[in-house]
Length: 160
Image (tube, rainbow, N blue to C red; front, side, top):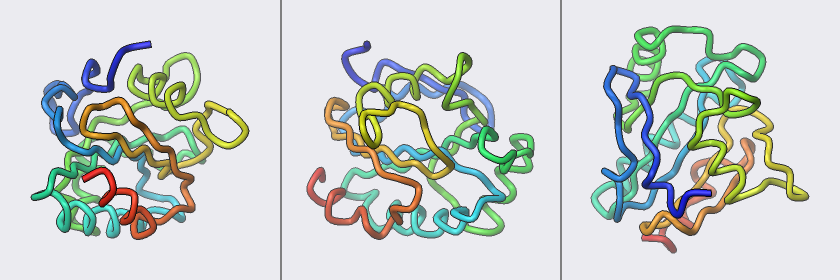
């Protein structure tokens, strides 16, 4: 297992590769997202957190995923348009990935091992599972899809 999350990179939604080392020293909220999910309105709360805390060092990172009920079928352009038009998303969004299975993105393989879910399970159960990562990239907390962005305020402030 890698030493920290900063050793990974991912393709941005608009193209190009982004190293997570670029976010060293920031608190990260990493979320697997979807445009057609019952939890999709959480985009608004995620954007509000980003706007409220980015000056203090929070960065929200969105990773679209189509593995749960085929709720993110669009291509990169459609996903970007949806997020901007419906929720004014300005936080970094990445190209669609897989979070479970043999083709799970290495970042998510790492996150699942670093912060297992209920009863030690590693699999991501649904869209909008959240991982809060400390500034040094070593402390990682995991939250269920039902945990709203607003419920994370205390923990975010604790890491800032």
